[in-house]
Length: 508
Image (tube, rainbow, N blue to C red; front, side, top):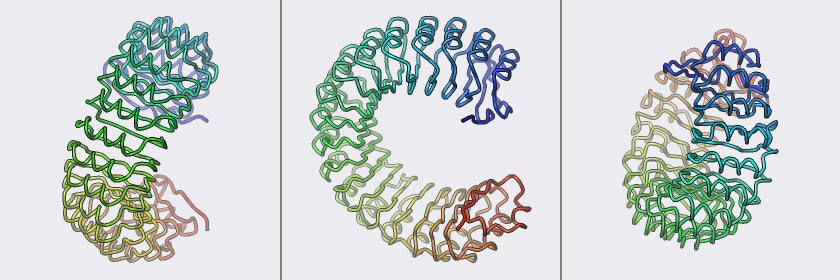
């Protein structure tokens, strides 16, 4: 796959920045680029798979002030990467994700050549990279601050080398199935400056490793635990006790972490600003009540498939976390109007609300939101109890609304569309798909004043015809994307729209 290069940017050290208008960048184009911009400092070549070591070597030889290089998805070999190490002595940031042609030979030379300047290193999904490369990173990159690793053949030895040789490490993201507690214990004892730790899909880590992080990494602010099946409340409790400055926590699919660990976070980590709980079946209301009681600075809460969290917890969050700005809830079937009413009554700074497929939330909740919050973004997709009354309240109370998803609301009709048209002139993106009661008339009222509309998705809306689609095109000069069945786009509408709009056509 090769993306058009005009989706990326090049920046020289004068600060000038602009898109390069090549369709597909090859070695010849990269060589020309290096000749024309010898002072280049930042270059992104994401998915430019026609680039080889020849082009990269030329770039390295001519652009010696390069500080940031993103080679994600480029099939470059050892020779090109080694040349970057040899000539680009100021390189600080390099991303080698999906560089499948790269082996330890090239990466070792890169670390040896740029080690003194390198601060951020991404080595993910490079199938031929082993612990040998990480040993070189540990040996030569003593000022490294950020490392991302995703590999099935990296073991403890490599991570231990990094921990021993990179004491300034602040960010560590690991998705390495063969790394165990031994490596995490080393990180805890040797990397006291660690601020962000993300652990993905680990079947070997236990509370022992997480306890070492809590003991040794007192500066930790951001922790992500995803699919770490052997971690429990004990490990999270250790983090809470040792990392009191924690501001961001994500727990995703860690089935042995429950409410006790979250209660510990609430008691100790009072600076928490963002919390994400995804697929956490053991966490009940008491866990979030602890957050609500102590974490008054919480600004963002994400809940996905947490079947045992209900209105009691959301009410606790609403009353204790009045600075809440973002609330995203998906498929939490115990949360209904009572919790959302509490949010509307207490969280006046809320601007981003998503309640996807929360089928106990109805118009009552949205009425409270419309009265108490000034939303910019709202997603109530699949909340089948919501109808015109709730959306009318939003239209009248949230004039700053710019994004709205009301897909799969079978009771929503033209009245809501007319009110949205009157009350939300800043609306730019709207999703109406599977709304069976909305007709061309409602669409006409919507776009009459919402002339800033960028995107309109209206698939499987039987009341919307070719005339409605034509109305959107003619009334909204800024529209760039329409998602609609192909047969609803007339030839006249196609001619009027021209080439500016990208139609995503779905056949019945």
